[in-house]
Structure formats: C-alpha cells, structure tokens
Image (cartoon, rainbow, N blue to C red; front, side, top):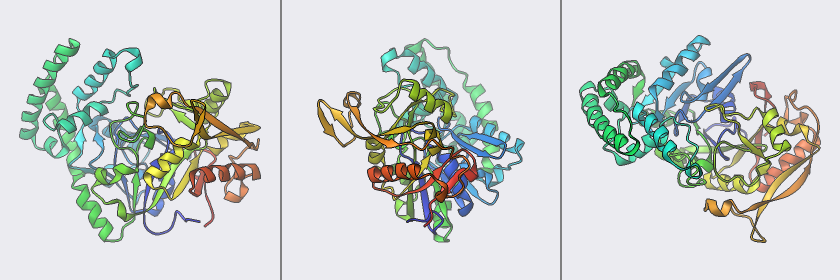
Length: 434
C-alpha cells in the first residue's frame, strides 16, 4: 500500500466537480513538504482549512500556509486577483499567520482587473436563463479569454513596471469601454482610477514576485519536496470536463505542467481527492443528483454550501463512472476520500457503477453534455454503518461496513484509497497503514 509520507513530490487534485476537500488534505500533508504550489484557477476556487477554532476559506493563498516552515507559491497558471489576495493575507495576519514572507508569486501570472469582473457580470446577465454557465462573477473567464487573445492581457511583471502598465491599461480600457458600451450599454470605466489602485497593489506585491518556474526547478534539483495543489475539480477542466459547464483553466492533473513550468515526471504521487458522495455547484449534468430529502440530508450534514459563493451544492450518491474517468485522466495512483462521516446517517448507501443510455448500459463518461443529461445512473446498494465516525483516529477504528464501502469504491476506481476524513479537523484525517 502506498505511503503518503514516502519521499518524492505529490500532486493533490480534485476528481469531481470541485469542493472535494483538497484544502484539508493539503493542510494535513504540507507538514511533510518544503514548498506548496498552487497552479490553476483563481479566486473562483475556495479551499476550507480548519485547525482548532480557526476556520479559513482560502481562495488564492495555498492551503499549506498555516505550516510556518513551508514556502507557498502561486504559479503562472493562476489568475491573480490582488484585492482578494491581500484580503486573505490580512485575515491570516489577524489569526497570527504571517504570509507575505513565505509567499512567492509568479511574474508570469495574469492579473484579474476590474473590467474582467464587470465583463463577467454583464455577459452572464445578457444570456438567456437556459444558456447561463453559473459563473462566480470573479472575472476568471474573461481573464483567461484575454490571456488567449494576448493583446488585452496584463501579466504581473507588467503590473510592476509603471510606464508599461499605464500604457497597456489605457489602451485596454479604451477597447473595453467601446465593447461594453456597444454590447451592454455600460458606463465607461476610468483608466486613471484603476491605475492608481493597482499601482498600490503592485508596490505591495513586488517583494513576493519572482520567476517561480526557476524557483521550482532549483528546488527540484536541490531535492526539496514539492506539493502541487490543484483548484476546483477534474470534471470542471476546460478541455476534459462537462463543457461548457466548466471553468476556464485546466483544473485536472493535465494542467500541472503548463500551470507551473515543472514537468509532470518529477511527481511520484498523484493523489486524487473525491467525496464519499457527489456534489456540484451551478448548472450542468449530474447523473447521481438526489433532488429529494436524501440529497438535502447529505447537504445538511456535509454543510454543502460553497466556500466562494455560499450557494447550496447539489448532492447525490457517489458517481463511480465520472470519478473513475477523472482518475484515469490524471493517472492517479492514490485516492483520498472525504466526508465518510456524512454517510453515517443511512442504513443503506447507493453507488453508481454504470450509466443506462437508451436502454443499454455504458461504462464510460460521455464527452457530450447533452448525452450526459440523458443517462440514468445504475445504482448498487451497499450496507450502511449507522455509527458516528467523528471520533475515529486510526484506520482500524472504522466499522466493518464502512471498510466495505471503501473497498467498493476502490474496485470501481482501480486505485487504492490511502486517506479518508471523518470530519473537518486535522486529526480527523486518517492515513491507511502502509
């Protein structure tokens, strides 16, 4: 059995539609690592970390920041919102955590600007009800669109050069104003006001900015241990998720190399994180959704409300087809299962082992969301345990029926479960004996 404490570098990535509990896993494991690397997404992602009475929702700062000796890195693939970043840093300081001296930010990262957030709101509002994506309105999609267009993008190193920043910002805001006025009848934005605000952000960012790819290459060469922290989930991946109901970056394990500049071959442990059930925020197909009292019971016990938006999450039974697809996509060799305690309320639990489509069974995850909307889950019953797991502190403390449920999930995913959580606290994460 794989030991998560073994030497080498590790990737932690979500296997479902985000909100899997990656923050708790990263916080727990980070004690064993030298550098934590966030590589994708932006402030639209939220990782919850709870230590004692302190509970934090981190959107940009890596979840390992609570470990005092650990260096945390925001790599080039992240959409950097300075306003959100500084809000988090200030909240951390209020809790006695100094972040700025242990935080490094890529000079290649792209900066979320006020016009990105405005465009997010305006474009979503202009869509018909049936066409809306369900964006968090954090400006992430428009930023990545500008990144691809190149001419409208501002990278961190450009933000730090006042003359370069002023010239680029003036041209970009002029173009955005014309587009927003034509499409949405929006009031013009003030480029000078944006410049003043973001010049102040630049001064505060400057000491933390570096070439993080160079930093990480050197760390690998020196034998440092790196923990790569994914954001959102594999089924929200821009290329491989349930398009168009996805995020705007490669949130699966496929994004780690492009998001950091570090080759995937340096990673030895690919740890996929999944809930013991399934949840999803916003629109898009979800075959195992339970829009009934059972789904509400899972939501209530699991506190299934978004870290970023506060929106109630849609809940349902564990979808083995979707999660196995993500595990194969990312080459997972270990699984962390979150929230096993949430299922303790049921006498019997169901697991989706396949889909039915037009009267026939399929075992693959369809690429077309219109097809995925038509499938019906094939559910197999598993015995429940009806026992409070919150006091379990060793793998051996788990009831026989709970161990049987884990074995069922392993057989579906073809990958060993090496960690489970029975609550949100650090000490409620159980590692499987090697």
